[in-house]
Length: 52
Image (tube, rainbow, N blue to C red; front, side, top):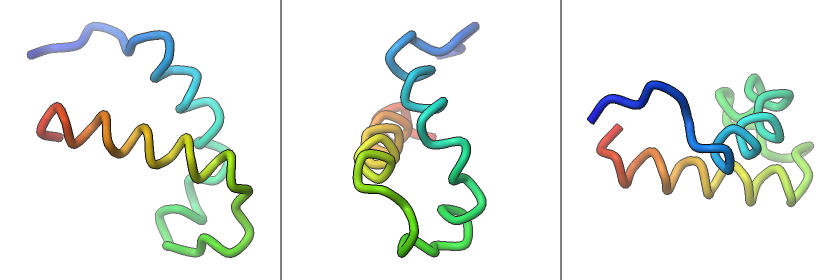
């Protein structure tokens, strides 16, 4: 499947997570707020459901 654009909900989650992408990439979750972690988990679950 090819996505031409992300669904609106996924774009909203990305906008929440992106300011913390460096910490997430480095697996430094100590300074990340819980709402950002929840958004990250939802994004991760969505991506894995697509086989990404």
